[in-house]
Amino acid sequence: MLRRSLRVRTIQASLQIEGNTLTEEQVTVVLEGRRVSAPERDLREVRNAIACYEKLPKWAPGNAKHLLAAHKVMMAGLVKQPGAWRSKGIGIAKGDQIAHIAPPAARVPGLMETLLKWVHTDTEVPAPIRAAVCHYEMEFIHPFEDGNGRMGRLWHSLILQRYHPLFVQVPVESAIRDRQADYYAVLGQCDNAGKSTAFIEFALELTLEALKRVVTSRQPRMTSASRIEAARHHFAKASFTRKDYLHHFPGLSPATASRDLQEAVSNCRLQREGDKATAKYRFA
Image (tube, rainbow, N blue to C red):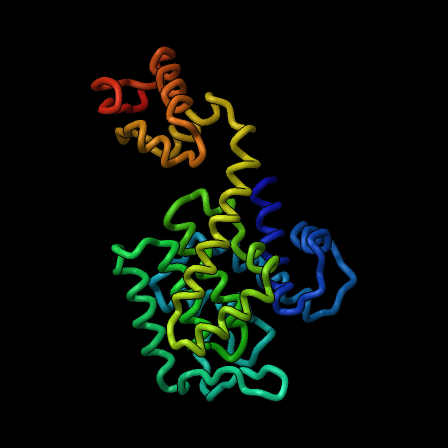
């Protein structure tokens, strides 16, 4: 139920940025397969996004074919060629002014291949920064006829989720929707500056805000037993340290982590090798 609620918030927020009129309650009704009275295009956008986010775990962030497949699902029935790079030049207008001219269409496949290869291979750059850079560069390249914003946000979330499972519960799209004016302003600022630094800082700030909300709201509801059970699913047969345990539960104090582990050892759920900070644990 939590994941469904988060998916509804994520989908509604990302589409609302693009002008979709459905509320979270209406998106929930569509997700449940019931009828909603709303503009047909808005309903199509929601149904497509639901299908797209359901397939998200199957796609790899560094795979261009997967990005095209995701666009095909997201934009089916909304553009002439879903799942294809754009074939024409494109400019973005603000009022009577041209705010951004995207690179020529002939360069799009090469630019996207280079970007996604970097996302996959340059693991020295922390994942939250790679996610932000990928998001900004997709907006700059504008690789698709339409749907570039929602695809940028989708791939941003995908990179974060592959980095750590906690990000499944962190709807970055909702954080962006809440600061939509700042989002577009910083994109324009980066275009004028010719570099993505400001957007990276903005995206990291949003990510931190979203993480704090999730950790603050979820942590008190977890008991020692539920944390140990979650750790069992995560670590499986692998050995781990208290530091690894703390990394898996952001916001947990070292003292509480020690109590969890000691209790699990006493109950014969965990086996311990070593002592104090150097101790390693493995599920029995």
